Image (cartoon, rainbow, N blue to C red; front, side):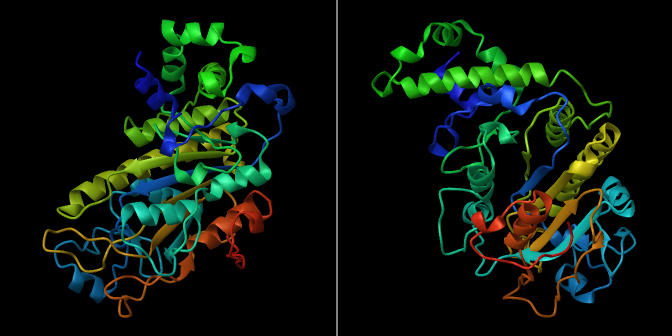
Length: 397
């Protein structure tokens, strides 16, 4: 196995930095099995800028249809909710969660002075800093620095670690597949390095840091590969990329992992042309996978202690373009899914399409307010150490 392939699988090269997972260092302190339930967060990122107006549809608004003569979804197709809003017809399973009182839909979520670049806007969401500032640490990474004693506290189901999970003292672990990573480390080259390297012979002059990282990654991979077979989900997840990821998250949770945050991306939402077909497909994949996740968590008794947040880096422009698609916009909707939401349903009024910001939806809720509440009210920690700006509670969690 080539070194480059290993680095990709283990995410040692994530975002240009190394990190040292330390799962086994404190296993005795953690008490993996038989531990009391604790709060967990699952973040689902809709990458590419999901079109919020064709996700949560203002089907009673004539401006919506005037600006989207081809792309607008007919009122007869919409899965009607309330307040003149309805769901994309591809989201039938998500609608069931909504009707069961498990979903809060926040409209017009964004930030001041928005940026339409995928990379820059995602960085802003990941770091939770003002749009004119930059940070090397993410909001979840700073949470780890302030409130977590172990690197295993956060796990991303991907080949690379998002900036959101980079801290100054430790980072989360990015992992595509625990079994494949552990098997790759069993190959002769890495197995020989792992078995023969000793801490006394490793220093910075002989790439000791990399070797130590490799050794501890092997320990973490072994832990992940063995622990998640303790229990398996009894719910059938969709055979899609997102379905597989969320199915693995469910397995991890049911297997007793002491991970607090799971991070998953659903890609492909940058739809500038022929948008309807591609977005409907992606939204159905999201809807079906999240429905299976909630059913699995309910059956295992873990839904009570699990919050699911779904966001996208920005919305799309209100007016359709000349290719039956939409271009990069600003504010968007955000979903919170949980068992005991204080305000399930449509949290705030839909965007006023008669008062746009140069053709874009104006933001009414700062996304950092959601982060603030997750830290303060869900995890019960001090958000002022994580988010530089203070907010009043949205009173959802």
